[in-house]
Image (cartoon, rainbow, N blue to C red; front, side):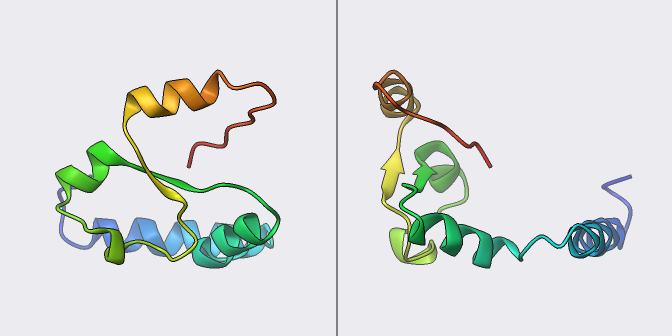
Length: 85
């Protein structure tokens, strides 16, 4: 269905409506809340490269960009808790 005209916009609208029903903040606000509470936010190097993004294209709260190897190393650190969004 994703290839049909208008389906992406419809799916986005439906997801936003469901998020509002669950009283979830918008994604930008959610990431800001996480950052303000001390959570470290990391971007995925592969996604950045695939979509030809630059650091300035990403949110200010981002702590950096990690390769998958960097991600695995951080995941092995003591006390590490991961939230993959």
